[in-house]
Length: 269
Image (tube, rainbow, N blue to C red):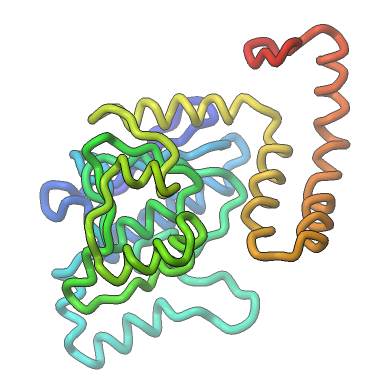
C-alpha cells in the first residue's frame, strides 16, 4: 500500500493502490502515508523525499467508495470528528489524503504521472515541487460530486497560481494539462511519460548534497513569509537564517576561499 525505498539521503515514498483505485486514498493508505512522512522528517539521515504513485497514477483523490459510506450520519460524525483540527497548538491529525496538514522541516518532491485530481491535486500541492509527466493532469474533479476541497486545495492553489485563476479552476472543475500547469505555476517541470520518478530523485539528490541547515531555513522562510509585510518577512528571514550562517556559512566560505566552486561551479563544492 505504502512503502519506502531509501537511497542515501533520499527517500522515495511509494503509494501503491493503482489496480483497485488508481491510487485513490482510503483511510488505511492515508494513515500509512502520514506515518511515512513523519518518519522521513524525524530521521536525521533523510534530507529529501520523493512522493510517487506506482502504476501510472499519482492519486485519483479521496476514495469515493469509502466516501459513499458516510451517508450514514453517525459514521460521518465519527470520521469528521477524528479529522477535526484540535484546539491550541496540538499537532493536527492527518488529513483525508494523509500528510496534507503536516508542516515538515524538509522538502518533498511530487513525481506526478497520470491523474492528480481532486484530493490527489491537493496532495501534489502539499509537496514543495511537482515534476509532471507530459500526459499527466490536474483538476478539481470532485466538483462533479458535491465534495468540497478539504485538504488544502483552496489554500495552496491560489498561492501557486493566483486568486482569479484558482477560482476558475476550482469552480469549473476542469482538466488542467501538464503544459498549462507549467505555464501557470502549478508544476515546476514537465518531463516525458514514465520519467518523473527518476528525474525527481535526481533533483532530490542534488538538493541533498548541499549543506542542509541552510536549505531548510531558506525553505522555511519562503513558506512562512507568504502574505507577511515586507518588514516582518525580512525580520523573519534574518531570524530563520542567521544561526545556519554561523553553523554552515563560515565553513562554506572557507572552502570557496580555498579554491572550490569558482565561477559558479556546482560540481566541486
